[in-house]
Image 1: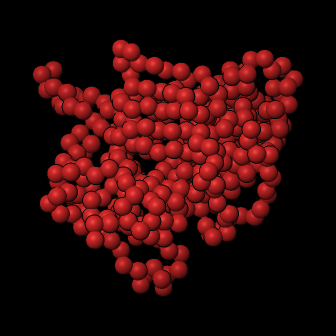
Image 2 (image 1 turned 180 degrees about the vertical axis):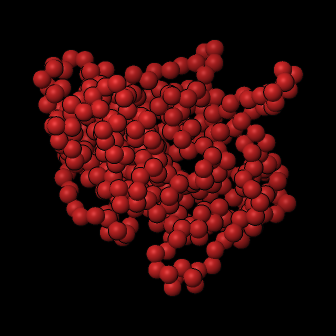
Image 3 (image 1 turned 90 degrees about the vertical axis):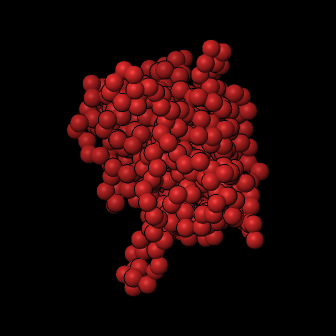
Length: 358
């Protein structure tokens, strides 16, 4: 049974040091992603004889999420973060690998003998999407939108119980009963995201996948949504998979961080390892690009500039996917595809043959 729910209504978060994000490493694993691959076959050109090419959106990703923790998933746009999130819940077909929920295989590779059992997964795992307005049905009232997961996944609940739960959740995210009769177009972006959060949490899931939930919002609204998610996580003892390209936001909310590049894992470890002592050159480059609010400190910082452009996932480099932009690349990087293993002084898993080689 999960631990008792805790309540915390602390003030706004300004720095990661203000947050107690310790997670027991012995907590049970809820979600386990095993060598997951999502490939798409796309046409090489407009002519019928142009042939097909394989786009490797996600190319062998493995990680887990424990009960009560937040795992941050970061990387540049186009690295496969959102595709991975959608594949976990079965919204995108999987090419290879699988997803286990509470030790039970729920999503496997598509094919003639594909095995898919997402009934419990879809009840226990919910998503918050990037575009808050587009994720809400414009023809439904807010009451209908928030009630839909309850009606779908818990059909035995009575109408009065549904109404009570919807009202309690909509008030918990900062709205009120009068809002229930309105339609999505009558709300701001921040309010729509609060509605999306209410819809995701009303069915009492164990894991919520947040697919860049604050990227379309103003900075001040971002802080409100992040604080709301943190409070709800503590109250409901939720686990979160938080997808974002903003490393500052991920640092403020996550206990462990997974860094992706071109569909692969570059580094995965505890927040203090990834941010305090990054091992992979790509992680160091991402962190050096995060601005510091103090102008004097920002001017004195040295930035690690990456050479070249991001390769196309249609034709990734041989060996290490990052080698053609890496300042530390050697000839051996072209011949070996490094697996994310514990290599350096920290416990983080790093996909770089030069880390820990002396």
